Length: 349
Image (cartoon, rainbow, N blue to C red; front, top):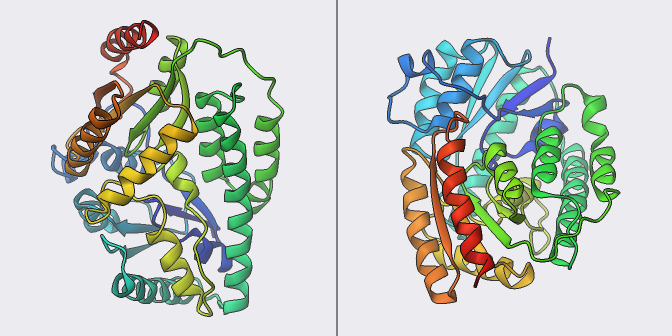
């Protein structure tokens, strides 16, 4: 039986999976079109969700013991409905995630996490005690802290490593194929930390934002002469959460506060002020000169988020470029022309 447990949304508590002896494996989608997934999902639905289902239908994923689907948006709700029938074999577990951060939401989410742990333990005939869960919480926080420290070095004058290399490293960190690979996360971080410094003088310093940032976009931005120093996405900086404040005797309450209190993603409709504060801190600390927003096709949350970011950039006098994408990797030609023009404009400012 496979020891890999799939997950998608960054609000999924991977600590619970680890404490139960699973190796969390994130589904990051695939390149290309998704004709078979479009048969079972509405055509005007999130391309990332369609991409994950397509990868499962075409058996492009490793064997999984199951998958945890956080119902964090409308597209994920649709995926949770069709995955048990058309996705991979194994258990499908669904997790409801609140859209705000207050004490009621924290308590509600903690109860959902407790229920998820019980279902996982029952389906895998495994036991979970609080001591093992606290150990997993500590283990994951050590990893995130190391990543945050590595990424913070990009606030300095020289910025090793490049955004493309950071995103590749984060992708490998999220997709270990066995427990041994998962234990080698330090190797990935240390290798990136030892990269020689690049001469980045004169290159525009950019914040890239969106729900999921395609690797192709970051690579193209840096090939065109830009420098991605802050990736505000759920497969980038938001994935690393932020340490929870205050001690909790209950690990499920702690995890609920940790995940809901992390840098908010576009779905957190009542946390716009906190999201603007998050942008402001990134702009100041990383000396951002321009912003590129990747709007996932058919993502309503991204549209609301872009309007908030546009207002923020106008107040700060920051140039902003919006690029629409469908997660297929086929937008490069259209993107490149606009990115080159955007970078030229930044260079003459």
